[in-house]
Image (cartoon, rainbow, N blue to C red; front, side, top):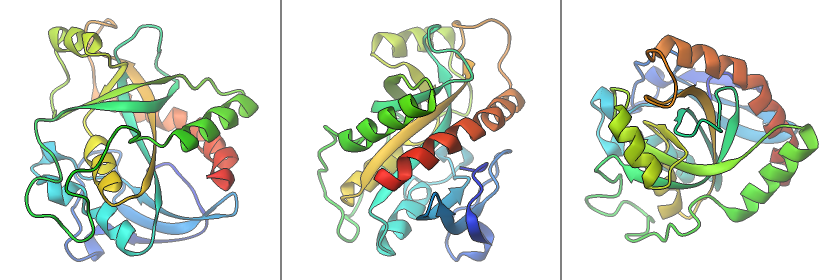
Length: 238
């Protein structure tokens, strides 16, 4: 969550953390920050590694495993996503109700690590209680917060119009290149998960004109104050 500013914040660069995956994507600061928001103590990850950068799934989810080891039991995952539905325009937040793993790989493949479940139940991957709190907080703040299904794809190319039509028929409302591995791993560790997408663009074939990463970064920055306002209201109840 690169645009989040915490009170009493102290940060450390990912590059100073042994074994921590580096980030090479513009808009990802690459810092672990300790602080608080609305009186709630937090560890915030400012940026993430992606599999399309060449990282292994285990590298991508290492931060989630570390957070679990230091006692974190709840995570709020955020991302920038493209809208598959013209009724979900850029500039909105979407509460993730469920996801589709279209990355063709799982972070849990291989030996079981620590206390992780071999076969985690993902029926309520995105905690129903957290979703209720976030919906109520959004209503109180006057923030539109539709719920939808997030499709995680490998990337790094944007989707073709045919792929967008396929994902819509599968039931997804937004698409991105992250979040799903972290959510799966968090649930395997028994952590409670909430997910929020910042809708930055209309996907290929839904909108007109070419897509550019610079526009995604700009739109994410514009949505950050709204996201922070929502979290300030919701976090003390989560």
